[in-house]
Image 1: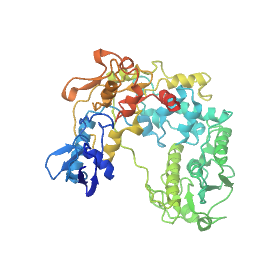
Image 2: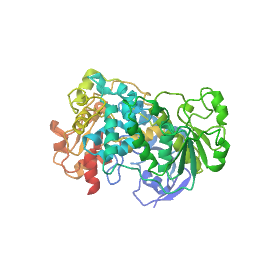
Image 3: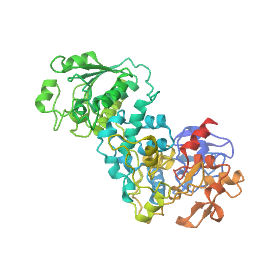
Image 4: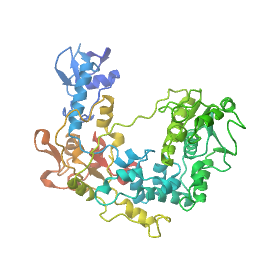
Amino acid sequence: MPTLTIDGRQVTVPEGSTILDAAREAGVAIPTLCYREGLPPQTSCMVCVVRVNGSERLVPSCATLAGDGMEVESETQSVRAARRMALELLLSDHLGDCIAPCQLTCPAGMDIPRMIRRIVAGDLAGAAEIVKRDIPLPAVLGRICPELCENACRRGSLDQPVAIRLLKRWVGDEDLAAERPWRPKVGAPSGRRVAIVGAGPAGLAAAYYLRVAGHQVAVFDRREGPGGGMREIDPERLPPEVLQQEVDAILALGVELRPGVRIGEEIALDELRSDFDAVLLAVGEIDERAASDLGAEYGRRGLAADRRTHQSPLKGVFVAGSALSPSNYAVRAVGSGHAAANAIDQYLRGEEITPAQRPFNVTMGRIDEDTAARMVQEASAHPRISPSSGEDAGFNDEEAAREGLRCLHCDCRGFAQCRLRRFAEQYDASVRAFTGAKRAYELDATHPSVLYESGKCIACGLCVEIARQHEEELGLTFIGRGFDVRTRVPMGETLANGLREVAIECARACPTGALVVREEAQEVADDD
């Protein structure tokens, strides 16, 4: 059996093992895109390259047999540079969006396309869960949100953007009215207590997420009722009972509300710091004098704090919402409150506070008329729907589903599993390192279980090999040469005819979001 060294780790493996096998045995992580255990090595992606015995030539670890006495380098600067270049070449011809423009624009980062798919599927609980991962006040924001996401909606380049705000409102209203409304699972008690000063959108959002994380939360507010500035909105636009219902849903998680308490007057900030493990100041827009009365330090535009970690100069004191970055948009305050809650949770658990980074993203950018026309083929062609009972009444169930059908679903359905995106982030690959003409947008939705976007295919060959091994009658093959090679069903047949038995297996093997399992098919597969 050969014994070799990989990045200084000695390992002995059975005869016939590859360098990749040896690396995994030694605990050395080598990235792969076109490799799958049980299939012949494809050697098409070249992201698994290594250097052997100091040679200038790099070799694919998935197809190079391990030899006795080999000295293998996997993490040197030159090897990493070669992997980065391989990834950048793949990205140069990658057509599609990792994250939909609407979600990128939403200050709370809500997964709008997934919410819409749940609405269309008639899954209210699923839609509510998706919304409340980022927005715990959907019925409120569904009435007062400034529709920033709709400004970015690609459907607007064809006729009118999807009515995202009204769809979010429908989810919120229906959830409030449901016999069994969706509620998050509260984590195991942490034994830590957090005081939140301010019951506006930032404070309420922070209370929600901190409580879900398992912390005890008390919210203080100088007003007698919660909601902050939202209580002053025209009641015809935001009925007080809607605001109260959504606040009550947050309080029902075990959040304590202490109204009519002025911090800095009746209770000093230092007293809160002494009684609680952390304090969040979400007091809304504040001037220097009010900050002094509160007992907090004032910065350039609001309370002094690191805008990334939300930490103030006072140990254990954090800042969120307009107190940190003045804004008239409640959705920005909600996003800030969520981020602050994450920071506080890390602080209470003794972890380093690491703000969420914007995920690696490939974008199609502006699309031309031809691309827009192709994208809308899989969406409903009817114009934007207006609520039949008027804007104040919102959508009924049928209208919400019909409006949801207008969504172009620009997001990548394989985002969470995409290894191309993960490795591009890991190796700091640039989507603009190589430029050139991109392939045309195509979406094959003929299969009941999977979707195929050829623009995201890297011709790794895994799906071709899986179909061949399972003896699909038509299967898949490569068409074209060089950079123009594409994965297709032979003889121009549809994907439904090409993959009759192993479509889901092929999609699960796909290293990008080119071939993905439809959400409804995924649920059936998970139940089997």
